Length: 322
Image (cartoon, rainbow, N blue to C red; front, top):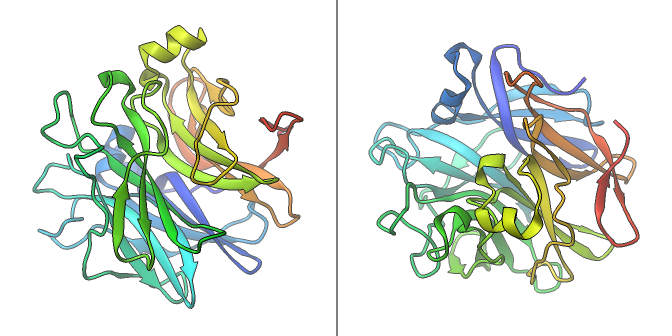
């Protein structure tokens, strides 16, 4: 069944669980735009809820671009939601019209009920540091990549961390993609740290997600086929695919490594994208993803039903029957 909006495309998404309810937040843009590539510059955040990850009730939109002249007045991009004490924190990416969308930053909105959201007055809260990351003005930089914040709380220390799509300030231009790192004690004041992955294999590593399964940390990310670097193609001998990949570590702060170079879900067309691992209502892990392109290359823009996830003896992930 999945989630499909008749009048809007949806794509990147993230979830928050509140009791038996799964709240999904997703990027959306009008299908009336006609050309799917225009959706990125016309994105807002939609919201729906489900108890089985299959049947969804659409709720009021969560976020739209800010007022003209604000830091987030062009488009809202991917984020994540975390609960701390009695408040929900939604971290999101945004772009401004004055910069023609070339600089990405991380902001915050909060809510008591997951429905009504209020922007933080000190936005944006997290920005790229040129000490470690490519910024506008770095040679070969087309944009200042700093998007898709995945915010989580360390299970042992209690401090908060953000994993963010960024590009290192060094390395070959086609392989500078890294997962950036920032740390906070209170979700409001952030210290930007070096990346938790090494550059080399991808132009960018999009839509990160960190999950713990059986004591092992899995760091998911996505990349289209065009973003596989020459070094990756040379070292792995694999044909580039579009989809969801992952790294593994014994600690949520890394070091992260590739246990396999095969994507968890990938193909030349890009049938599925922006995948997430979700613990279902039965306690079993499953895979959700954007239904991205159809086999004929036309854009779809809706959400698939959950697919079972298996963990083999080596700790590698596999998708089950679907």
